[in-house]
Length: 382
Ligand SMILES: *Cc1c(COP(=O)(O)O)cnc(C)c1O
Image (tube, rainbow, N blue to C red; front, side, top):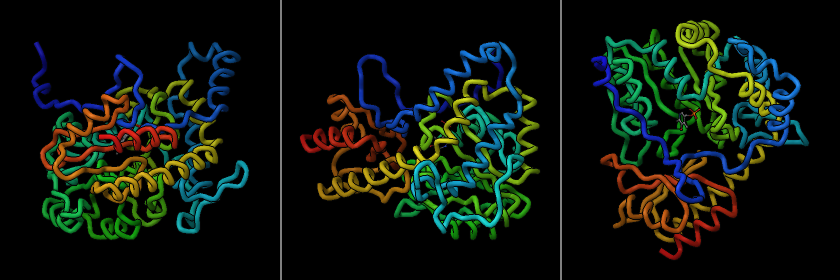
């Protein structure tokens, strides 16, 4: 009774969302700070004063939201942790300034970047050649390869857990293939510099797409947004889930050339015209206007991350330098599962992986100062 294609599906398993007791959740890279109060206010006003809108189809192109995202990117440079904040005004660091403005025709929005990635895979990757990606990266990419029947060519990481850029490029050129990777990468937390990504774009097949997933770029790596001026085959995927405290409301987007962005619209309009509903759109526009608040939170998370990294290293843990809102760490002689179990017993959830090669590691989301203090106490004791 089931379609043949179901045999290709190997669903993604998200960080657990248990309901049996109240845990401190440091397992899904959610933001520990709630959305700014103006976001809840905007939703309330929209639902009360424009109640009729809840019964009408929303704008399929979310034009005003795409403008708000463009304005936010232009104001922050696309890296919250590195902006300077004065009152409610953000200014990009010199490093993140672009000589051009992002416009709304370069932006496409969807119901979380997982959905946006699904559209991106459908739009740009064919079944006739393998897609080149790191062996360990966001584990949704192999899932979509199965979903769309795209062969893949996973390239092992280097000994230091960084991307093997040379081999990725050699393989992409051998098969004239597109590439996809997260930058910073997950679950390692390691970021390539913008110059390194520019080098990939220079050496990758010109008629193929390079997708850079910047889910964590707001936590202090170098965004590739300035490279859009030079490379028309670059597609940057971003999410509101992590740095904009939006995981429960769902919003992701791409930034790319107007031509490629338009192609993704064609795919979206062949699947679901309205992936961003009226309330999510309202909340997202309010979030963009409160970028300064999220930038402050990103700075707090970065400070907490660096202090937690030091804490772990002082106690003999191996910790990879992170450019994200999580750390990827292991302790000699202890399995990831054992660490996860011990910490869960004390009321905190972290993530472990059963994938061979990284089964010793745990991935710990950076929470508030109080949450990290609680975690440190537990780790001290076990
Ligand atoms: C969290 C994450 C996403 C998914 O984000 P959503 O917008 O919540 O769907 C995409 N890519 C990477 C690398 C992520 O870590």
